[in-house]
Each structure stands twice: as structure tokens, then as C-alpha cells.
Image 1 (cartoon, rainbow, N blue to C red):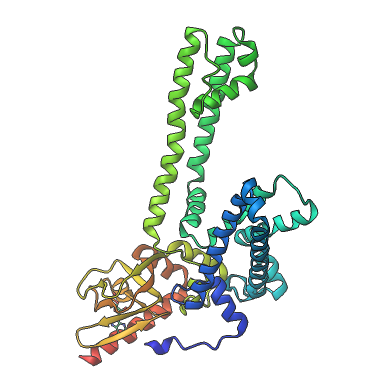
Image 2 (cartoon, rainbow, N blue to C red):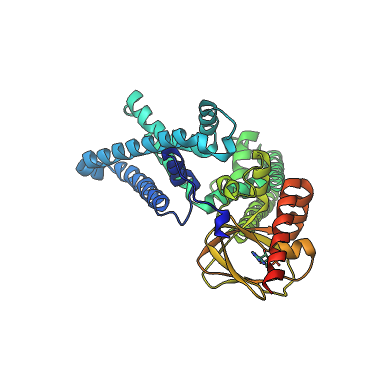
Length: 392
Ligand code: CMP
């Protein structure tokens, strides 16, 4: 079965693409490069903090500056290399090299990388800008590339955007109402502090967020009641988005042991011929699962609820009569979903493996949507069934 995944002869550009962008967790070079870049980013941020302390800057200023320059050079090389390999990206296939690079430069992570280089440019143009520490700390955002959790927060915010927008509208409504009521009640009593809407809005925001506002105490009884209600509403208004994001975050983390990338899906031979839109859909549908050696993924006779694609690693398939191995690029678990009969084999991981899981509902939807996928899966399942019959 490993023969279905012939070794590719890689060009230098493809190899660098693999190392920089594909992030195969079992690729040593890719892990080393990721590790070095993460250490540099974190150290660089530490250096920015240290440089802002006058005593440290006086003593170690020259070394810290040299380190910062070194980081800039490495980040610049990294940026140029990422641009250079962009035409290898499966999502940009079909574009000419220049177009692919331009489009790649516009992706969020590349914009962050470009911003991370900006302080250096600012330093050249405006040598003593007060914004320097702020712009340099943008480099911390580069970590988004290496942290599934940060990428997950982005996805959660996008997927919960309607609920979050509702929270913002509720919060704005409460803020304006509290400000208007306070202006009506206390506007004349304390004109210097609560005499107009901007002033009472600031007071309402401080009360809602519980960040103080204590220095502007209402002097009337009614004003105090309104203040108390505002504080309580504040707790509700802030708890709501926190709960929404918290729940979404938990769901996402549970669903994904690792971030499924476009390149990862495009590498599965079965999907490699799909267009970019279909692959992007799959990235959203597939669930990631990492397993340790010895994990039993399914047992013969079980009911089928999902099929699996192997992104990396190796599994053993044990039918009634045969034992065979599947590895990167192969899939399994399709037969029970197609026939709606019990699993025909027990499948166990023999190495650590990263798997892409396709749940049965999504599987059935894909069969309808992608005739080539259906045909290929049916063909492989038929061959496997015949192989099992002959083996017995
Ligand atoms: P399913 O029957 O759903 O669950 C067990 C899986 O093992 C099965 O789907 C196939 O994906 C896989 N399998 C069964 N027999 C073979 C075979 N002869 N060769 C490769 N894979 C197999």
C-alpha cells in the first residue's frame, strides 16, 4: 500500500517550501527551523522590553542592538524565502510565479511578517520614534504561525462573529442608556464631571468595566441606584462575550489536535486534483487527530462513523485473513461508510500518526458533491473487498 505514495524528487524550492510552510511535524529540518524562529521571536520581544529600561540600555545597549539587527536580518531572509517558495503553495497553483507571490504577500501571516520588519525601516526614517517599542512588539504576532491556539482564537472570533456583534450592540446600548440617565439625574449636580454625554459615557464605561469611576460618585440617591445597576449590567455585558469566546475556543481545541493546513489536505493524493475552493472547504470539514503508537482506531465488527486520511505516520490494518500497512497519503475506514455494514478490519497505529478525520455526514455530503472522489473511493473499496475475499 505504501506504493500508492511514491517518493517525490523535490526541487530546492519545493524542499524549502516543505520546511517553511508545510510544517510537517515529523520533518526534522522543519521542526528545527520552526524552533529557531520561535526562540528568536521570543528573545527579540524580551530584548525590546529590556531596551526600554534605561539602566539596562546603558549597560548592554550595544549588544542588545546587535542582537536586534541580527533578528531583523534573519526575519528578512525568512520573509524573502517564504515569498520565493510561494508558487509551490497548492492554493496558488495556476497563478504565474509573480502573481502567486503577490497574492501570498497579502495573506494575514505574511502581512504580520512584513510588519515585523517595519520597525527597522521606521528606525532608519525616524531614528528616535517613541512608537518604536510598540512597533517592535508586533513581532510577537509572528508566533501566530506556530501556535495552533492563536490561529484557533482567530477562527473562533470569525465563527462567533454574529454573537459577538450582538454583545457589542448590547454593551453600546447599555452604555448609552446609563450615560443618558446619569446626565439627566446628576448633570446639574456635578456639571464638571457629569455635565455632558461624553463625560457621562466615560463614567458609564468605567462603571461597566469596573475599572474605577469611584472618584465620580453620584451625589443623589437615584444616581447611586443607577450606578449600582450599571455596575451589575457591566458584569453581565462582559461575561457574555467571554463565555462565547471561551466555549468556542474549547470546542475548537477539542476538535483539532493540530491545525489542518491547506497544504496538508492538498498532499493527500485523493484530494490533490481538487480545485483550491474544494480543498479550502475540506480544511474546514476535516478534524485533526494525533494518535500514539498502539492506539486502536477501529475494530472489526464496529459500526462505522468516520473515515481517516493519514497526514503522517503508519497504521496496521488487520482483516480476518490479512495484515497490511497504510501510510502517509493513504486512507481507511471508507468501506463501512459506503456499505453501511460493520468494519471489515481492526486498524491500529504502529507509529505516532497525524490523521484527518472525515465524519460520516460530511463523507456522504462529499460523495454527492465530488463525483471524482466518490468514484475513486468506491474503486479502492471494491479492490480491498476483493483482496479480502481472495485472501480468505
Ligand atoms: P472499514 O471496513 O470501514 O474499516 C476497516 C478499514 O480497513 C476498511 O474500511 C478499509 O479502509 C481498511 N481495509 C480493509 N481491508 C483492506 C485491505 N485489503 N487493504 C487496505 N485496507 C483495507
